Image (cartoon, helix red, strand yellow):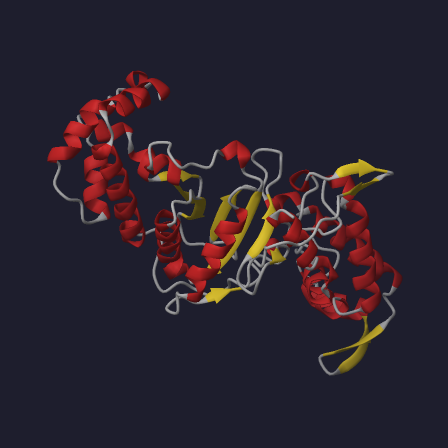
Amino acid sequence: MKPIEYLYETIKDPLDDNAIISYLIKESYSEYRGLTHKVRKIKPKIDSSDPGYFSNLIIFQYNLWKNNILKASSEELEELNIKYHASDFGIDFLKLREELRILPQITNYSEFRKLFNNKDSQLYYCSGFVERCENTWLYCISGNINLDKNNINSNDITHRLYVSTDIEKAVLFVQRFMEKCIEHNIPYYLKTPRFYESRDDNVIVYTNDEWLEQHILILKEVIENSKDITFFEPPVLTGKINSFIGYGSEPIIKGMSFNKKRKYFLEITKSESENYFDKNKDKKYLFDGNLISLQEINEKTNSKFSGRKISQETLEVISEDEGLVKMVREKIKSSLFANGICKKSCFDIACLNYNYEDGEYKKEQKDVGKYNL
């Protein structure tokens, strides 16, 4: 049995947890944010927009990259010139090697930026190898650092692993994960927020079938040995591998994230909550010490400027109603197949190599084997 099949058999569907359905009801109007900001409501001790926040990680990557350039043969560097069409961008990896040989040691982020901002330097065109940023994310990719050796091809990525740490310690955790991968000669491909945002997914490891098991084991080891880092629950809709590692399938549509693919869960929850409210306006609940109807609760708490049919306080009241919880669960689960999602909602059909039979996806049963993730 492949590691992903083992995970499918052992991970509980988040939608089977009443507390998660209740949370979705409370977050009915939050659109996407409610899926990534459940736990992380803690203000940072530092500002991660400060370049110093990333200094150690960037210098760590720079030194790895620099050493790989210096160790590379002339033939290997010529191959890089051809592969990257380097001359089109003003890069010559052979000249870069000579330049790196005489550069002084870089010890902080300011020195790094000063070097890489020098238009007369070969480094000017190379910062993306060391500090690849996209939107609000900083990416750490072994192939960029290792001159395309020991790499995970982005087209092969089918799985995501989520970890939530102290925002002040996210880059420290990332560096420790990278160091452990390097120690075992395992490629890595991950990202962490570039700027402070209180996300539940501030470390995301991208992986494939080949490296899934090893990446999970390394995450477990680094978490276990990081007593100086506080860890939180991963995003609410991820499958829980353990208390601090979440699983989510990589959508096959490029540019779509695991949570964005599932944000329609909130649309369903909002619709079901509003229908429930319409049918149960006269039902009485205890609110502020008084037994009053849902209609009265909503009138007391819903501002005419909110643009919402139901107030947050009303959603809080009905979120524990077993009937509504059941309806929301059934409605979401009935939608999964049509959206390319498995019966266990944190897994996509495409990533499991299911066979289509008799109107549903079925897989071949195999022994669990050695996997004990």
